Image 1 (cartoon, rainbow over the protein chains, first blue to last red):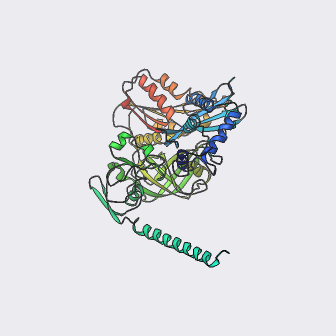
Image 2: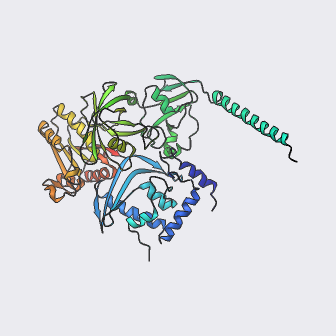
Image 3: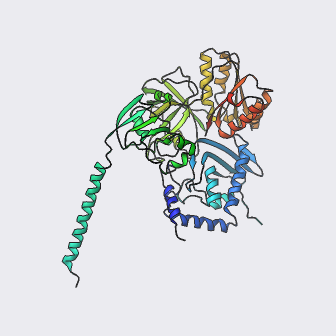
Length: 155
Length: 370
């Protein structure tokens, strides 16, 4: 698929130092359209939609918020904590509003695996099907999300 | 046959054109981009500086000893370095746009890190920023308060003293290291007593992948130089006779501790209760210090509460979320004011409980990690 001018401009905003220190792509040199296409195919292979993934992230974040910063148990076997640090981030796709730096840490006790994501991640996945570039330190692999957050394909 | 001479003449001509273009660019950079000296007027000319044009406003002000709060070190990614630019700023840049809404535009608010001083400029900044300074310090001690919270004590070198009131925060400058090619700034509340002017004590909680906290936990050693600037913030104890409710969790302990130490030094008789939330005993810290303060402050009570104590903790104190403990401890709040410090979720939930108990929102003061 061809990269549009709009996607090219968005990709420029994802470079290190423009919106965040590390940017959103790491060393991934692919065009943004190729990154989006590859992750879209992966999510399709998992039998999921980006909305399914974002909704599950929201569900666990909201459950963890009740812990007021301390980890709390969420059935059936998750431990979730929601923390915040000072600062806000804008969406690189240009959506209005700012995203607070709220970190949700989900530990799947059964698998003994942990995943950390922010409110901006939830927005980027749910609204833009974007999981960050392959070498980005903040990339979330769709497969890891599906496994750790136990997101099952809809019947 | 290919004319060899013409080929070399072509190469020569291309090289010559490239050299001329490069020269034009160098000359343009030295002349067109040279903005010369410009006047920077602050607060209707109360302060005026002649500065070299071309630098971002944030850096230009810093060179003149005026420190604007910034958590990202000038990358336009924190939105904190807002100033009113009355004249001399160009158009809003794309990097500023997400941070500046319509109301901000109407008030000529700009991000000082993104506005370059290219011509005479008039700006307006809050008066309290004039007392902010940069300090060269040295790490005097490092202490693990819990497995993920470290106490960092800095001895001031130059200037040797800082004037601050309890509740303020400073910015810690993280030098370039493996996680950052450039220095970055992070804000931390001061935990020490304000009267100890040669020392600044911080309580820093480890954030996974955090640039500053990784530096502090993995690299910082006693004797290392550290640059800070400050003090900042409007979190302070109001002068009243109301009973005080303090609520904090994690590193939110820092400004509350500073306020309590200040109260103890002044021999305050105000009634105060401090609710500190943690998960288990291993997450509690400074309990002995707080208990010692109960002896110094006759009307002070420290109430640590654990949300999920372990059997081996043998905990006999308050249990539950801090909001539940607050709810249990008060019937109606008709002669109180509250001071909260911690993460957004804890503060929002606590405000809800306090308001439900009758405490007006204008008597709830907080330092939110947001």
